[in-house]
Length: 569
Image (cartoon, rainbow, N blue to C red; front, side, top):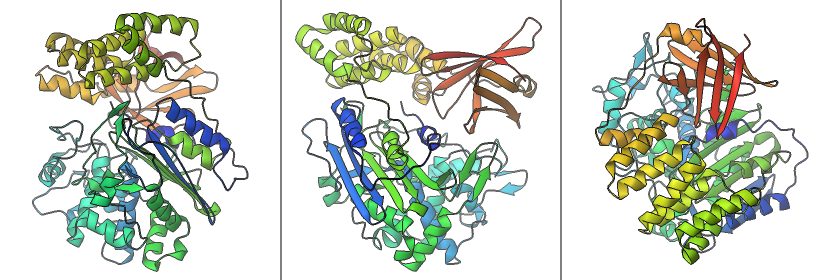
């Protein structure tokens, strides 16, 4: 299951700045070593620019099985970092007078396509570029025949149907809500305006001028030969071919090319004047919401008024880019794993940020036990070592999950089933183990238990679209909950979960929002009349009334923790 990872990045650039080293520190290199050694990431490549100094650091392989060493020429998917390319292309068109940020999208769409409006207001190009269009993260007609490559068969006809029929639930321009479909639409509008494909635009206006010869949407032969294969957990997975929504996340690149891109962004006066001016426009603050604690340039997220940053994730890759123009510094971190590498980039840019030690993987130890002694004895071993040495290994939920999928891919279904059952027993309040167990039961043709576990997964995390889609495919009814405005209003107020940590609940236009201390505001979605979930992270909240029917408390469920809070205002 994929999670939105940007929120974790955006909240971490709040550490004190101190004098910066011109080199990647030994601490960062040792941290990268521990991540690779303990199978969190298969390969990691870092490019760091500090003034005129450029340094690369690479570790790991292009594939878990039979891979070669990764380096700055290895090819990765950069996911949503592609959005910053889209913003630069838009800025080029704006500066040339061909387009205007305030142009409505209807100016460029085919006449048969009716763009969504709300209260007489139209979506503009600026709204798309700042995630303030009111469009959601993904289109609801994205129903891929291949979950491992979910965008490959999404067509322009699908996009047009979605745009023509979507009803906005929030006023345009009122809030920032991260939208892949919005940025993908912007990329397509650039295609319609220019008569060129999005890839052709990227190559002509950015890649060729900066000599980024390995930055493309479609692999050429040279890129294929240097591809770092994507991995989901311990397993190789398919590349994501994103064409229709390419402006949202379709680009593949290398650390070497991305260093050139960073240099152009932080030293833009040294490049072609048109590209320089476009990058400067894309960097300017274009939307700020104090209530949400959000500031956006065009596609770029602005943190602390000085950092420009973005990250990206596809099925088997994660990436992160950050710039500090005033200090002429920047970093790109790429990995061929779906484990976020944001802490690496943050640590390089903010040396005071504490890196959490990486414990040895219990999955590696357990796999050997299974091979040597069988799964039943290995499970006994796992339970004993977790009891006797709980701090010696990484026992997080992802460990058993990844190992289970490895055995499932090898056709060893009974071993995988036993590991998924163990994971459910060890983490009964986590959604993902039930999702995986459901998949294993489906693989052995036990539809009844597959449905039961997918339902439980969805109950624990109503934002689990994988479970929702699976149940719908089996014609199992999935309840959609609507909560009245009056009931939503009763939940508003401030809840104290700790002396220094509070959550403020507000409502707007029939939608409920939560804002924790020091964090942006996020929407809550109902799974029951008093139960809600977030889509940006796997978390739930539940509200409780006293015997008089007045709401007096709430509980936050996240990362296996149950945190109650009293209503104080």
